[in-house]
Image: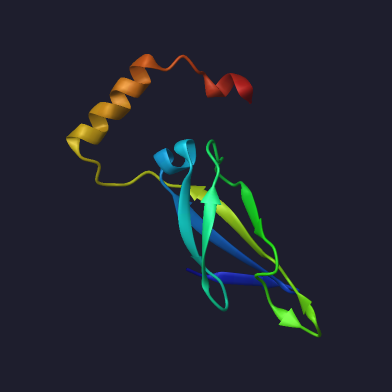
Amino acid sequence: QEFKTEGLNIYKKIALTPQEAVLGTKIQITTLNEKISVNIAPNTQNGQKIRLSNCGIVQNNKIGDMIITVEIRIPKNLSKEELDLYKKLSDISSVNIREEI
């Protein structure tokens, strides 16, 4: 995964599946010095930013942060069972997210 830097802060994108974003999950993030476990809250939105304090660049006794941007991605090769579950979810869902825009 690619990093970008701005000052002492590091910016990184992470991919989540739709179910991870809806239900929440725990993922491993590689920082400059270590791997850390990060809790992803339920109902995390695409483009949402998560700040990991003091996980950025160290310089002159100052430490930046790592800012992670969430990208929700749909897997390309879903099984028939997975597609059937999405169809069932579509059939029972009463939410129209386009009304919220």
